[in-house]
Length: 285
Image 1 (cartoon, rainbow, N blue to C red):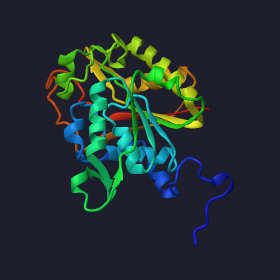
Image 2: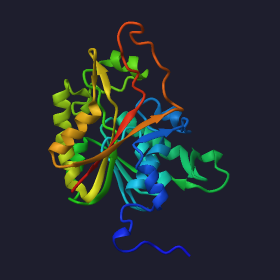
Image 3: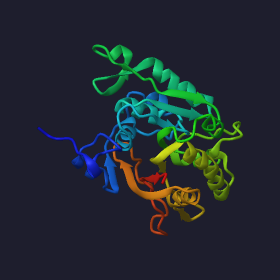
Image 4: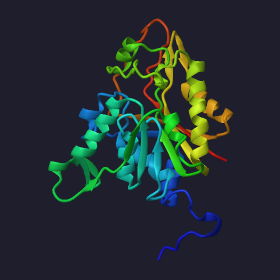
């Protein structure tokens, strides 16, 4: 009979075994998750992540029944992933459109046999999607939480720097701007403003995070005005400046939903097709 690990080898972070833990230390993270059953609703947002990917991240950085917080919850990908992983979750979202979509998903979908499906398609039983979504500015909502009360923060912050609706449409086919929302981080006029605002929010995240626990951020790099913008690195550095330790990253690409390569400046100059995202792993120490 396998004996539980004790002493300095006790796993205090998650419920994984050694082999599963080792797999997660690979900095290259390739997945093949197709759009899930909620995709027709969630695609209105554009920047949605497969719930299965979020569930894998959550399983590494939490134990069962530990709370997962997403301060930029969007249409609830992190909350859906938490439900798949058997964790309670709390999300903050400024835009009422995305809150309404998540609540519609909660109403119409359940988890059955380990997958998210429509209620009427479940053969028998199923678990409700219990993640809580609160509408409002995440900075204000974070201030309502007690210090050192959150086991993990996992989020995909908006980063529409210098983008109008045309720029978003060209890159994603969806307009994710919310020009009527004054505090929308995606409306930052320039990179320094974006990073400064993110640091302000990051300080509150660090306050509510338990010591020794993690902030995980999914951040895509950009290509603007003829230059590659290593946004993942810049965000990680901004978080280091407010006290987080940058523990590493995973380079994630989902083959099943990766867009086709576009012929940018063929036979002229090198322009990359950015088909990956950075999963930044930061720790409160």
